[in-house]
Amino acid sequence: MSSGPLRPGAGPGHSRFRFDVCSFTLWMFHCPLLGKSLYGSMFRDGLGTVALGSAELLEEVLRRDEKFPVRGDMSLWKEYRDTQGIGYGPFTEEGERWYRLRSVLNKRMLLPKETHQFGPLIWEVVQDFTDRVQVLRQSSPTGDLVHDIANELYRFSLEGIASLLFETRIGCLEEPIPEGTQDFINSIIQMFSNSPHVIALPKWSRPLLPYWRRYNTGWEGIFKFAKVLIDRKMAEIECRVHQQEALEGEYLTHLLSNTNMSLKDVYGSVAELLLAGVDTTSNTLTWALHLLSLNPEVQSRLYREVSRSGPEPSAEEVTRMPYLKATIKETLRMYPVVPLNARIFSEKDVTPFCFYHYAISHDERTFSAPFEFRPERWIRDGHSLPHPFGSIPFGFGVRGCVGRRFAELEMNMLLFQVKAQVKKARVSRSDLASK
Ligand code: HEM
Image 1 (cartoon, rainbow, N blue to C red):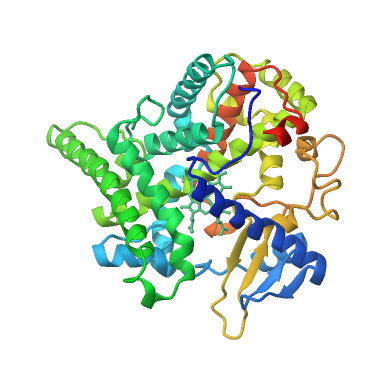
Image 2 (cartoon, rainbow, N blue to C red):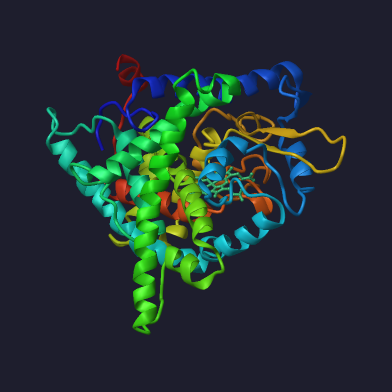
């Protein structure tokens, strides 16, 4: 990896997008810390919710999760779907229908045995990523520079989740990226970067300002791309059924052929899984590389563990590597991609709860030296492990992250490969400050 500007960023390098993300990060990470230091572990915030900032309180509330937990209002995501007749996915669906949807989606996604089958698919994408990084380094002026590693990891994550969901490669790691795929990436950026404006502005301003139109055009591009690939897979399945071939499918084939999901519900779910599966893993990996570059002793220990394995580890092997797993876990503790979460209870008079995950995972009563990167705190090595609710980056219970196993496998495999290839890369704090 480059010894150049290895700094976590927002993926695709649009300066406005970066600005939005920077202010958002400040709000998401630092305001909760400030709130906690001023008012303690539980207080009413200005948003009409009760803010929780300790592992114990978080545990108490989450252990009372209802049968159909509610996280918050998703009406903004529902509007486009409603006007286009597209079904809801796991984020937007609620109640009994959500429960049924999750039981279908969980089947192939959450059982370790089932997710290990994704190993060869992910490994192929990992190899293409490292090949691409080699080419980028060699063609750089210094021979070792990757100009925007966050953007490369964004492409990697999108290729990974898309190859799982669509059962085909979409070319994010090719140069140039195929036109349709680039349009799709632009649509995702457009939808996300217009979201803060759409949330903040009143409904009456929608016809007057460009944001609402841009936001919806973003969704249009996302669904258009997903629909083409899903329809293609559906046609392939029909052909196989016609020829009486067995349907030994991967994820999409499973959804389309083994479940009662309608096509419009498959469009809705696949689009949501896709959106949830890109920024989450790519940002975490960017932070992981950044933290490793600042901590050479962690790199050495990780390198020792990784080099005990063969060059092409299976999914089972990487999931058994304790220090590799601890490195990702510690990265997510320091920089949880979902720093705030919530639960709304159906009982009358119960105020919604907002969980300040960043503040909780930096609580020094749970983690000594909370601002230091210490993967070993997650290794059972004669000392007790931290409070189980001190860091729960994937959420908790039946509404917890459906992509967790896939995400962990993808991140473990990528980090394995990077570490197997690079013994030690160091960026000093002064290097970073000077960039
Ligand atoms: C670093 C990687 C990831 C992290 C840290 C993460 C974290 C989370 C968190 C905190 C939640 C909310 C859980 C709760 O409310 O209790 C969530 C929900 C969800 N995640 Fe992830 N996620 C990651 C990757 C993924 C991937 C790769 C996918 C897709 C394959 C995915 C799909 C989803 C979906 C669909 C939900 C909504 C579940 C529901 O409401 O039923 N996530 N994730």
